[in-house]
Picture 1 (tube, helix red, strand yellow):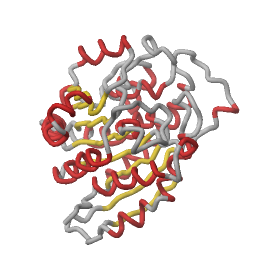
Picture 2 (picture 1 turned 60 degrees about the vertical axis):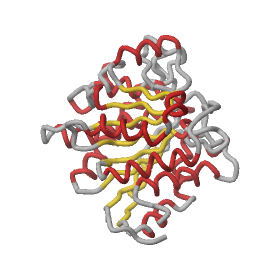
Picture 3 (picture 1 turned 45 degrees about the vertical axis):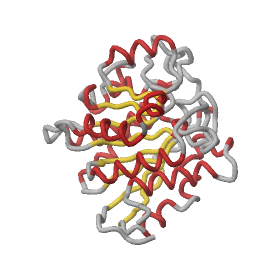
Length: 308
């Protein structure tokens, strides 16, 4: 790899949480991405990289799920609140947070931390949400009660009150600055939530028809409109299972490896990337850490890896 000119300070944080998911395993995701060499490969691109270790996460086996419509919500709140504070400190220190999950409920903490820093400066942030699912259920609409299906709703100010009010302000992002990319598997009530929410939703059909370049260019415009920049929240089940088999909720017909790297490269080219997280990697279901290596590919592309 050739070092790039755009040097960044990057701080890696792991969140080995699967409290929000319906099956165990994604708690091992941060280790799989580290084993695939994410820190060293980012350094080879010319970046300054530090690894801040993992946020402490309790084990679901030693406690009851509590609220049946929002399982483990108290534990998820405490984990995400610790993550929020850590991410806010990273951003305040002039570094870019790279958060490794863990189930997608961790985005409540990651986005809250970045948004809090810019909120205190009187500025907003945009959000690109790459996922097979919209993650816009609430405790009232969720068929499972799993919080990893609710984080985007929370960040938009909908859902469990305690999660919504994390950090003392809400919503964390304005709807017009939020883009869903690659969605293809939504609950029936959730479809109506998305349609009426005001977010920009780019389904897999739209990616097929228009191409990733056109979709991503439009999404970046929306995310950067009157904002300090955008956070990229990337659920690996947004990818087709052929490319990323190690996810807990695989859905056929997703983004392929080349499209994912183009997406990440365009995020890098924009020079407006404020933070990045990779979620829902389940090594138990993976094949020789294939999905961990794909996650590292995406991270590298988001921080300037290119063909020439």
